[in-house]
Image (cartoon, rainbow, N blue to C red; front, side):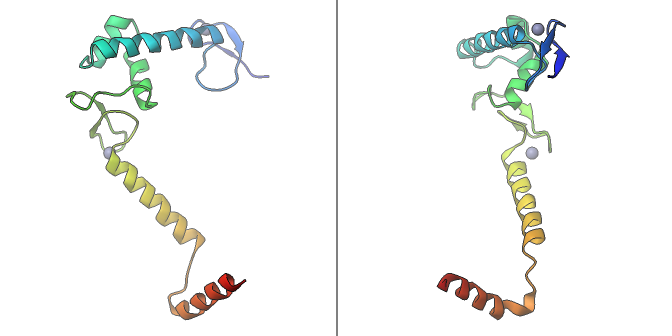
Length: 136
Ligand SMILES: [Zn+2]
Ligand SMILES: [Zn+2]
């Protein structure tokens, strides 16, 4: 059993996963989230400090919801949050599209290099291997 102090109220609770919050504080946080969601429907152009002030929630918490893709800035909003890799302003999540693509490619390349080291000279052989495999 993993017993921790709740980050919200300081009480000890059985920690399972996710944020270090007891069930009661989790519940409160979820209520806060739906409050902010409603608020954003009425005020789609609100900035993070405005949302924080009007809903009594920390700017860090709002940013976390944006990073978790639970909140996002509307497409026509001039506001956003910086990509964690290049700093470009994005509407939700952690990275901009090009960084996401970059990282996917880097990962794929690294994966291919590691898992499939094909010698350049044996192309014919590997073609034959492939056909033999398909015949089976
Ligand atoms: Zn708590
Ligand atoms: Zn980026």
